[in-house]
Image (cartoon, rainbow, N blue to C red; front, side, top):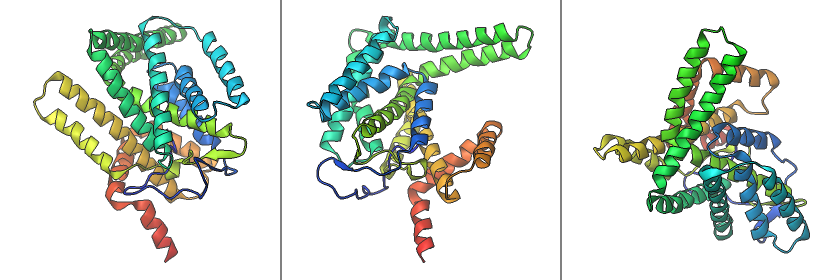
Length: 332
């Protein structure tokens, strides 16, 4: 979800002057951000990535450009591509329904609040979609079926991964340990899939918005996708983190604890990403190949330290606003 959009702590950043929801496109298309977003959608893997991106994109095309012939050509191509994607069962239907609901909510947020950043509109769409889906699942015992289906989905992925490793390394002692770790991760993903789905949906909406913006023939949508160094969100979201902690502390039962864990995971990832954005901003300039390799190695081998540092910096940025202070100091 790198570079979702610039959000300020207390107010929205002024947009470029233009009439309507469109502004002149900059020459930078942020392809690196788009690649990172695609990787996030694929790696989180709660729902299939392609429909989760394509269906909101189709909704945006219908909502913003219903009379343009190229929009209908694009819709036909997207429908044909979706028809080629195999699938079936409860998860197939729920994932498509979720993508359509998400796309509709995002379109509504974009029409009602065109000056909001992509993250703000995406977050509003995800929250509204989770609320609607939660109410629908609460009736008729649907939640239990979906919960079971998601847990089985993650278990099947872990099983296929372990089988692949056993096939390639049949004599490796660590293969059995890896299989056990995969099983435990699948159980954790089953519990945390609402938070993982929210993160995947935010990345998918941002990517869909970026793709739609690229199709505007030289005119990009306002509040477009920005580089990672500008990623931030409203400071009031710290209360969501506090609510998650409160649900874990108070004796509210199993469901309250599960809701608390999901809120914590969702916000911890966002704050860690905000911390990474601060690091990238302070590093200045475009990263070199050497710095990217060293950063990747540090993240792999020292991930507890790197993640903790990013989380603390991101959380502290709520009050310190490091980037604003750095810009102000540079002007003195």
